Length: 339
Image (cartoon, rainbow, N blue to C red; front, side, top):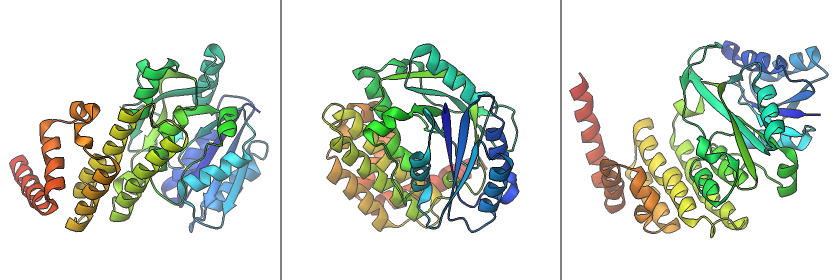
């Protein structure tokens, strides 16, 4: 079999989200592929919909039910274990793909000998095949035979995992899997996975549609989800050390950690959580400094962030109470200026 598409599913029955996704998958132009949809203990009609598609497309659709909620990473791992394809792709169950996406990715792999192939993607706010807002993904200077310089760039910007296909032999040989029972598992898995592959190519077309709606993870920020991001930041460093990558790409991993664990969480928390707490901010600063002391001196960090961002980050490390007051006052001031 040429390709396995793994789809983790959790409570996506409403508003035609799951059906729109699955319709785009069962109508792919590539021949000889399978769809493995793993229901992650949904409490709505999602699994019934999956069984319906399995009944209608028994030669290429498998509906798997997990009786325990293991989050997206755990559901993907169950799909990987059952996959028979030479290649594996991942699709989130509220997104969808262009009809020729996988045919084009496979063709690119065959033409170039690559063992991982990606494409571009776009953000949309309605169920449509019209190309929406292009999103930043992998860059052309990351593609080709992967050497030290390309690996460095991929550690810091591995790109989304749902816009790629991966050679399953590499996954199996290195026992690559996703963190389970947590959010933001891609933030840990994606850079580690990319370091196991040797040749990355890209189709320069937006073939994946990222559906932005109120129920999506990125639009529902909570302290729990911010804590999950911290966990993934720590696990990223642990995995890098376990596989022997940390010493090779120390500055890159330390920057990736600082960005994921500290900077992204700091601003996500302040802008997304209704009543931010000083204790969380204190623990955030303490954890970042314990894992990577003096991360603010990292050359990539110095280049990536502007002076205001670095000033705010430093203020939280010095005094979370002062940062909390300053941030709120600054946010109120800017909000008033827009009126």
